[in-house]
Image 1 (cartoon, rainbow, N blue to C red):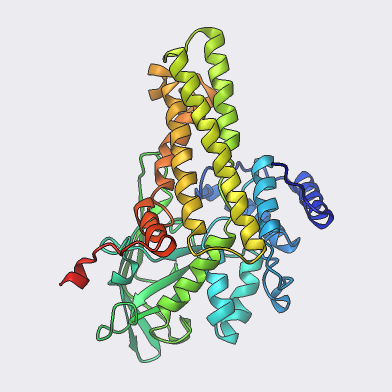
Image 2: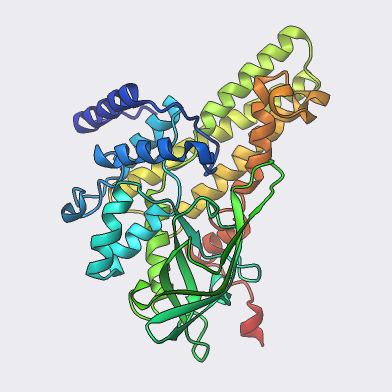
Length: 398
C-alpha cells in the first residue's frame, strides 16, 4: 500500500524539515517520554517553544490562543514522523493534558495566565494522577483536598510521576468529597511544584534513569482559584483530557525502523560468524517480527486516517497501544538475544550498536504498562469494542 501526502501536507512537512534543519538542537532524542537532563532544560524548552511558535505543535488550539482551531491528525502524524526521522527531541510533559483541561473547563483568568506560558514552554508540567493503591483504578485515589478559608490544603501521595523532579507545575487530582461515589468526589487542580510541603523523591529504575518520582503532599496550601472547573468535576475533566491526549499524542518511533535495524544486526552477525542462534530460527523470527512491525505501522496509520475522517472507534487507541508495545518489546528482546553473552553488557561498554538494543530492551517493558497497562487495555477492547461481558469487579460483587 502506498500513502501519499496532498499538497498542503507536503508544504507543511517541507516547512517542518526546513525548521529542523535551521534550528536543530544539540540535545539528543531520548527513548519514550524520558526526562531531559537538568542541564539541557533551557535548550529543550526553547526547542519546544519554537515548535509551538511555528505552528507544528498546538495548531489545533482555538485562534484566540494561538492555534488555527482545526484539529488535523494527519499533521500530527507528519510531525511525529519528521521529528523521529530527524532524531530530534519531541515535547514531553503534561502540557497536552493541562491545555485541554483549561481550554474546555478552565476559568478565563486561568486561561489568560497559563495558556500563553504553555505555548512558550515556560514551564514543565507533570501529571499527578497515579497513587500507590490507585494505579489502574484511578478513581480509588486517596489524596485529599480540603477547603480552608481561601486555600485548598492538599494531603497525600502520588507515584510514577514522570518529570516530577523537573516540573514547575502539576495537574493534580484529589478527593474533595468523601460522602459521594468515588468518581463524583474527585476534583482537578493546578499546583505549583515549588510549594512548601511538597517532597519529590526520584525512583531509580532498572534502566538506571530516575524519570519517575514519588510525590508527597504534607498540608500543601494552594489558592482557592487553582481548582479547574467545579468541585467534583475532576473525573469528567480527566476523561476529556486523556481522550484528547490519546488521540493526538506524539507517538513512539516506528517499529518498522527497528525491524530494519534488526535485519542489519543479523547481517553483520552472520558476516562475522557470531550469530548465537541457529540460522533457521533466526530467519523465522526475523520474518515474523518484520511482518508484525509492518502491520503495527499500518494499524497506526489506519487509526490516523480514521481520526482524520471522524470515524474513530472507541478502542482504536487501545488496540494500537497493545500491538505497538508488544511488538516493540519482541524486537528489543530479539536484538539482545542475537548478541548472546554480549547481550548482558549495556551502555558504552557494549560492542554492538553502542548498547542500543540493551537500552531499548530495558525501556520496552515500560511501554506495556504506561498510559494504561495492556491488561487494562485488553479489558477495554473486550468490553467496549467487542461487547463481551464485563470482568467481575470486586466492589460490585460485594
